[in-house]
Amino acid sequence: MKLPRDLAATDLEKALRRAFGYQFVRQLGSHRRLTTQTDGEHHLTIPNHDPLRPGTLRAILGEVMAHHRLTLDQVLQQLGLG
Image (cartoon, rainbow, N blue to C red; front, side):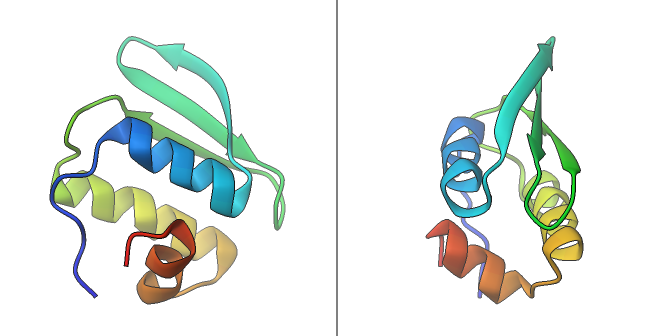
């Protein structure tokens, strides 16, 4: 499944909140920190850019995949992006 090319950080944050229970913790400059307690504690840092660059999006989703032990297709499907 292909990654979306026009995804804004705010849209990704909303999807992560709905699908995996991530919550906003703090912001430093243009980087937002999210944390979830689902499947153990996990932290993500997302740059507040519109749109996110494909490599940045891939890295963020890679962290989500590793923590929740899912494939890219499964993550995209749960986020409603695929």
